[in-house]
Amino acid sequence: MLGKKKLDPREQRKVRQRYTLKGTADRPRMSVFRSSKHIYVQVIDDDSGHTLAAASTVEPGLRTFEGTKTAQAEAVGRLAAERALAKGIHRLVFDRNGFRYTGRVAAISKVAHEMGLLSKEGYTGAASAEPAGEQE
Image (cartoon, rainbow, N blue to C red; front, side, top):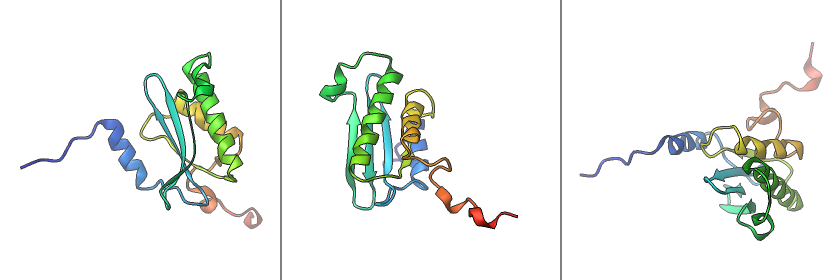
């Protein structure tokens, strides 16, 4: 009899995050994957199952990029955000894919925030915030 496969801690965090994190056509999911050498970003519509925009350090334009891995991540994040804006996407949900929110992952998020694709409230959005007209 086969038992359940034990997942590594990152995969467990990834599965746990996906319960609440979902990309829609209005607000696609910006997913980040990092390996020891490269970083990959995809903008995904989970409803249709399509990748709308993507960027990575293995692309010819970024393969020769000089700088630290964090600087490379910023360049990849900027390229992915520009491609998303070119497709008419103005709001995203950030998916760190089980990785810790620091270093290269945080650099991509920072670039997306600067370009206006991520809101300050996070993926719960304005649903938890009070409307501006109802303050006492």
